[in-house]
Structure formats: structure tokens, C-alpha cells
Length: 444
Image 1: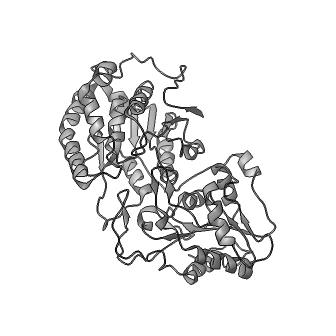
Image 2: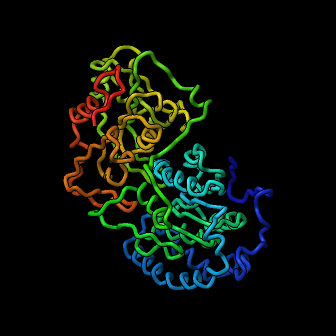
Image 3: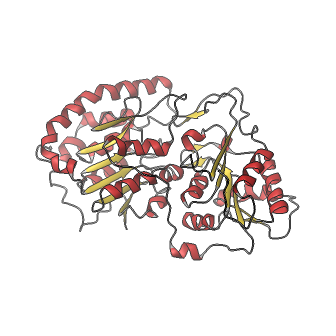
């Protein structure tokens, strides 16, 4: 698999910059780099998801809607010149900069794309933080590291322009834009991709050729993986039994901790991503402590407290004054790479934790999952697929509507959702998924 960073060009696979993408296209340096109107547009919408005021959000939506007709007209004019790209795409690009859990939920779509286009080259544009996900997917041929571009408030316009220039050199035929940001929508157009498929949220898919409707109502929730799969459905790609997927390397599999008794992975952390902290997604630590006690004493398993280096202290708090047999609880936070964590999870009989990237990773390596939800909804972010009997999501929100919606935390007058999930409820889920330790049986 090839890996690049913005501005790094693989000369043996990229057409020269001056090569026109289709017959009537203007020179890119004139139409973008020196076009004040495009720069002005990019400036106006660059921070559209970065905690801006409702008035500004409304202005961005209005601007996006005004741009729909001009972009649609351009597509009508250029369509006769790009028939081959539409009918038989050879170079496909997928754009989703952030974050780890979100990229894991894009993996069912990657499988669908590869099945439909077995001979195409599939490139994935991902951020430095999250590119590890697609580096471990067999459908992806090339990964382009876009740095922090696409993370609201974390990049400069110059980096955005450089990324557009880099992508344009690849002369992609088809783009799947998996982000609702108008900046990412515009990026695929600036890259000169003839066919651009993506979600159209609040009219912000103005630069797309195939605008796929997506719900913006908290009463009609769609799972993120299904939103991505809807893009494939919109262009008539067949879909059968979609699942998330992550493939650890042999080296990562050989590096894991092994034990003589069954292992259960527990993740008390979560809610930390570039540009966002949402620690309200965490179940109380004292309840994790009580749960770990029962797991070790009643089931005799070894509990692995997992996470990144920032989760080490949190896991130590769970272990504080915990009366359990020696070596029955290990704090592995910060000791594994993401790939090694995937391999470690695959060796466990069960995962228990909050809505987080390790939760999605556990589902992607196909082990039973108990996910505890609060401000987010399992209908949107639950372990996928939702109908898998080995996936249990516990959610006790008082209103039945998520407080975290459309990428933002809404005001909440009664923040009791995480406290509403009891240790007994989680324990009942444990007994359902691992009824005894000497059988792989799962009760649906």
C-alpha cells in the first residue's frame, strides 16, 4: 500500500499537473489558485463546523444552497466529456479525514466499492490521527495523509489548497465524500473529480454530482455506517451483509498479551478526539470498578483495561483498592499501537466500554460487544451491524433523543443518561453474551 502526505507526489503514478482532467476544464492555476472568488468562498465556510454561532451556520447553509444551481449547471456542461469516468471508474478516492471510530464505520462501504470495482485503484484521504484504520483495510491501495485538513479550526487555507493540488494530480474518476462539511464537498470539485458522491446535509453538498439526502432530525436517526452505504445505494452498487472490518498484521497478532484464562477487554475512557472533548460519554468509574470485581470473582476471567496513554491514569483509578486476585486485572493503556490493540481485542471473549473507537474496533474484529451509551445514540453510533445478536447497546436517555447530534453537543437540562445504566444491567448483558466460559454459544 502506498502512503503519502500532502505535497508528496508519487511520480510513477501521477499525471503531470498540466494534464487537463476533461476537455473543457480551465487551467487549475487560473481557476483556483488565483481566483479570488473561490478563495473568498473557502474563507467563508472554512470553519463551518468549528463551534460557530447559529446565525453563521444559517448563513453557511444559505450560501451552500445558492451555490447548488451553478455547480449543477457546470456538471451538465462537462458530463458529455467524462462518460468513461462515470461508467467505468478506474481511479477512486474516498475522503474522510476524522476520526478513528468514524473511519471504522466507513469500512463496510470500502468492501462494497472493492467488490463492485475489483480492478480500480482505491485511494483513501485520511488525517494523521485516523489513517491507521484504512492502512489496515485490504480494499485500500493508497492512503494520503491530509494532516489536520478537515478538522474544524485545526488547519490553514494554505494546507487545504496544497491538498487540492495533490489530489488533482491523481486524476480521479470517482469520489466518495463521507463528510458533511462543505469544505470537503468543495475539495472533491477542486480536485477535478468528474463524479462526486456524498451526503447532502442541509444543502451543503452543493459541489456534488450525486447528492444523497441524509436526515437532520433527531427523531429520524440513521446509523453512520448506513449513511455511508446509502452513497453506494444511490449509484446502484449491490450491498450484501455489510460488516465493519479491521485486519491486524501478523506482527501485531504476535505481539499481544496472552493468558491461560479467557480475557475480557474493558474501556472506561473515550470521548477524546482532535478538536473535541466529550467526556460525558463515560460511564462512572465506580461502576466500572464494581463490574471488574464481578468479572474476576464470578467468571474468573482476566480483565484487560485498555486505551491510549492518556487513559492510563483513568484505568489506575478503576484498579485503586480493587480487591481481586493478583494479575487478574492488567492496565494495558498506552502499551499498544492501534493495530496491536485490534489484535488484542480479537483474542478476547468480550468487550465492554463506552461509545468510542475501541468499541467500534471490537466490532470490526468480530467479538461480542457491550456498549454503554449516554449523550450519543446507539441508533447512530452503536456497534455495527445493529442486528448482530452479539452486539448489545445499553441506552437509558430520559428523552429518547441524543444530546450529541449533527456533530455538536446540544444543551441538556437533565444529564442523567450515563448514571441511568446500572451495573446489574451490564451484568445481565455479560451473562447473555458469555453464558459460560467453555462455549462460544451466544444467546440472541
